Amino acid sequence: MYRQDYQFGGVGFALTAEAPIRPAPLLEQFRAPETSAAHQIQCRFAARLPAPPAHPPLDTPEEKMWSKDGAIYGFHAYQISHDDPLRPACWWRRRGKHTEMLWAEEFREMLYARNILTSADLFGSLLEEGGIILHAAYIVHQGRAVLFSGPSGMGKTTQAGLWERYRGADIINGDRALIRRGPDGTFWAHGICYSGTSGICRNVSAPLAAVVLLSQGPESRTEPLGGLNAFRALLPRVSYHTWAAEEAKNVTDILSALLSEKPAFHLACRPDESAVESLEKYL
Image (cartoon, rainbow, N blue to C red):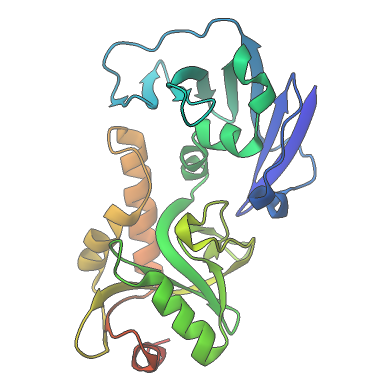
């Protein structure tokens, strides 16, 4: 049996399979020592996969998900090549910290660690451990994390780049951040193995200083964002399955706790140093 272990924000995942698990460069920095406390994702192969139910709550050509008897199920179809049609690739079932995966035999030579984690609903497992994934650019400045969030095209990576250029901040991720309580019991930002088009992905954790909601404006202006307004603005930026009542409850609870403990700001900004100058007065 082959095994690879990874850790995200203090949560471990042990991947085991009957065939070699191919490494993914983006994931190597998240490799971790073996531990029995990790989530177990066990991969086997089958000539035929169990069929998904008709009309599951999540139902797309590539992915289907549903719940039954306290377990979460998923079914994925992938292309073997760009010109190839979608083929049934894997079926999985998660109950607690154990995920059983069945992969179609034809994918035996294409068993990548990233595909396993993505197919097995990594974000859902992290949510069960008290972590939410926020669509945001993540920087560390003077040892503290600042997250820039907002709709696509609003300038998240631009603002992160301005802090790097003018204040020497480190850009940790240009697209996603894992938010979960850290070793001191407060909310921290953590690296996660997705970077979007930015290509920036580092395994760094830091205490969270603030979450910043962006909009574009003729001049840069920062203002504190109240709890309910911040919640409404951030909820669409969190990755979770809206059809799953338990996930929706967990996200609501975590986000509410986060906004009661950490400040949120609205930054109407220009793509220049004035945006940095406006925000830093509040940090």
